[in-house]
Amino acid sequence: MLSFLRGILRDKIRYLFLLLFILFTLENVFGKDVIKQKQEELNSIKQKMNIQKTLVEQAKSKERNLVREINTIDQEIEITSKRIEELEKHLNQVLVLKKEAERRLNIAQKNLRSSRERLGEKLFLIYRYGNTEYLELLLGARDPYDFLTRCRFLSQLAKEDALLVKSIQDEMANVNRWRKELNDKERDIKATREELLSKQKFLAEKKDERNKLLAQTVSERVFYERALKELEESSRVLEALIRRLQQTAQGPGLVGNLYWPTTGRLITSPFGYRIHPIWGIRMFHSGIDISGSYGDPIYAVNDGRVIFSGWQSGYGKVVIIDHGNGMSTLYAHCSQLLVNEGDQVKRGQLIGRVGSTGWSTGNHLHFEIRRNGSPINPLSVIK
Image 1: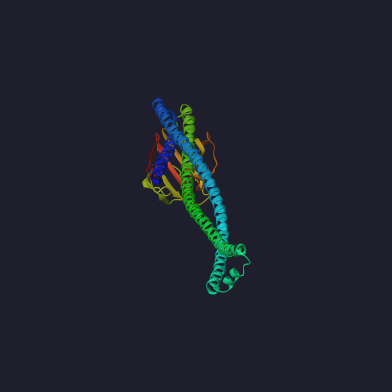
Image 2: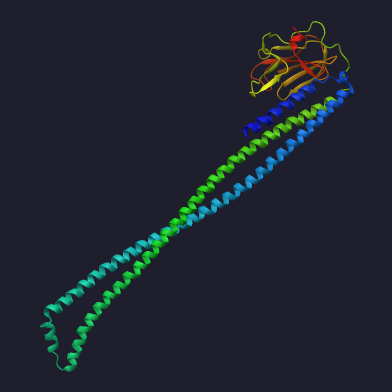
C-alpha cells in the first residue's frame, strides 16, 4: 500500500509541475495552437480529477462498510459478554448447590454410621444375651397371645432399624445422583464459557484488525481528497490562464544585462535532475535554489508584467513575471509578496522577500526561467 501511495504521490507531484508549466505559458507568443494544447492539458487534468473522485468515493464506500462491520462486531461482542455473565451467574448457583449436596451427603453419612452402630449393638446384644434376657422376655409371657405379641415387638425393632439404614442409604444415593448432575452441569457451563471467551477474543482481534483497516482507509481517502483538491486548483488556474491567453502584449523578453534576483549568490541546488529533498525520489529540478535568509529582498530580473502572485502548492508563495517574447521568470517559497497580478514591474524592482513556504526545507529562493513554456538553465541567461 505504501508503494501504491508513493505512486499516487508522484502523479500528484507531476500534476503540480504541470500546473507550474501552465503558469509559465505566455499568451500571444504561442497562438491558437498553444491554446489548443493547453485546453487538451486542461481536459487531461479533468480526467485525472474524475479518477480521483472515483477513488474518493470508493474509499468512502469502504469506510462505510467497515464502520457497519465494526458496529456488527460490537453487537456480537456485547451479546457474547452478556452470555458469559449469565453463565458465570449460573455457574455460581451450581457451585452453591454442590456445597449443599456435599453438606447433605456428609449428614447422611454420619446418620448411616450412627444407625449402623446402633443396629450392630442390638444384634450384638441379641447374639450375646439371646439365651437369657430375650429368652426371659419371651418366657415371661402370660399366655400364648402375649408370647406372640412379644415376638412381634422384637421383630418390629429389627425391621425399624433395617428400614432406617435403608432410608439413609437411599438418601445418600439421591444426593450422589444430584451431585453428579451438578458436576455435569458445572463441566458443561465451563466448556461453554471457554468457547464464548475464545469467541470474545476472536471478535476483539477482528475488531482491532478492522479498526486498523478503517484508519488506513481514512488516510487513503484524505490523501485522495487532497490530491483532488490540488487538481481542482490546477484546473481553476489553468482555466483562468487560458482565458487570459489573448490579453498579454508582446514584450522585449529577457535581453541585456539582467538583475540578479536576490542578495544571496550561493547556488545550493542547480538546474537539472536531483533527488527531491522532501519526497526522496529522482525528479527534474526546473530552476536553481539560491541561498538566503528569511526576509532577504527578491528583485525582478527585468521589466515585465506580473501574471501570477499568490499561493501555489509546492512552491508556496510565488511570483511569475511575463517578460514577453516567450520568456518568463518565477520566484518561489517567498515569505512575503510585494506585487499583485497585473502589475507592471521594472528591472531590479523589489517584488517579494525570501522565505520557506510550500515544499521547502529552509529559507531560500527558487528561481526559474522559461522560454515558450519550457524551463531553461537560468545560469545560461543570467550571470
